[in-house]
Image 1 (cartoon, one colour):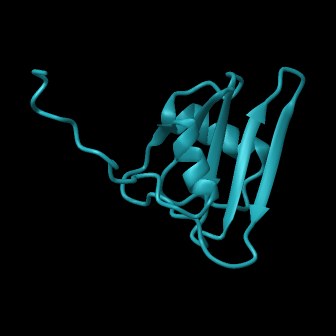
Image 2 (cartoon, one colour):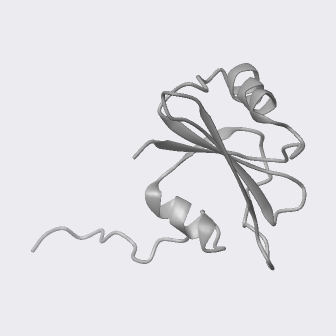
Amino acid sequence: MSNIYLVTGYTDMRKSIVGLMSIIRDSYQMDPFANAVYLFCGRKAGRLKVLYFDKTGFVLLYKRLDSGRFQWPRSASEARGLTRQEFRWLMEGLSIDQPKAFSRSRNRDF
């Protein structure tokens, strides 16, 4: 699977493929032609755009939730890498910053 990058903060959802490519290239110095998926979200967190280059052209996906909102990080404007698990959490409406289920044991002597 490709690398997954989430562009935090707000994105103008009126932007087309060229506009989203320029954000990737100019704001984050990343290659929009790379084997990567880029996720964008606007002020209304119930809508999401995904940009991907499949070696023959760009694919632009648009998802609008019937109800609810994506738990989108709004703090700093960055292109944050996601794991597959974090991507699943996001698509399920959960925060990508989940607390750890177990803490590491400090005593390793058995």
